[in-house]
Image 1 (tube, rainbow, N blue to C red):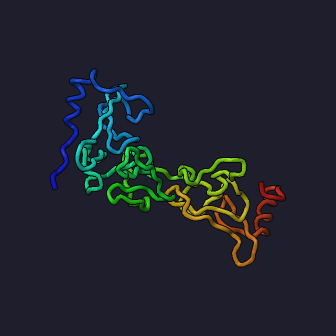
Image 2 (image 1 turned 120 degrees about the vertical axis):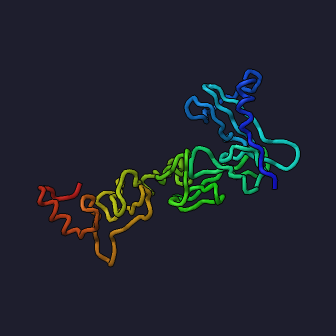
Image 3 (image 1 turned 90 degrees about the vertical axis):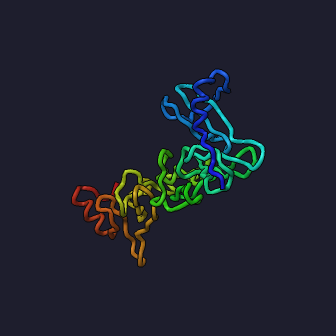
Length: 230
């Protein structure tokens, strides 16, 4: 198989003939003002050359077998080959599924998995290198966990959050002093815990980070001059 031809040659072409190229408007997909090549988020075959405040679009489309832009090698490659690492450039949990049509399909991994462009699959986050892509840790960063409408229960109330919290059991901020708590790892919600085990009512103590019988909770609070938990 012939190796793909690098598109880095377009860098010099861009500097020499920038005034004759199509100016790209819309959402800014470039970082800073440095000269760089980034994937076109709306076209698997496209890429954008960034220079200062200017954005210029090119396409790998041509006659013959369909081609896409590979963001890792920054080259035009044959779609579906081992050189094709098409992915969503902003979020590590999202990726583009190129089907050969003019518009790619935007997909999202199930929480808390991330997309690995090396294996073309959603994998356990600890095995994925996000690089410049934003690494999503919170359940509410995933669109599939969000909802809208009058009957929608807020995402935080349904999933909780482990951002900024240590590994292990932690308080569920929306359900303090209840049997409910979260098991966190690497600032991700791994499990929703429940202190109600063996038919005995227990409450999760956010200070000790463990389940305690109600009698012990009242005893502890009475030492601080409170009759009930806040």
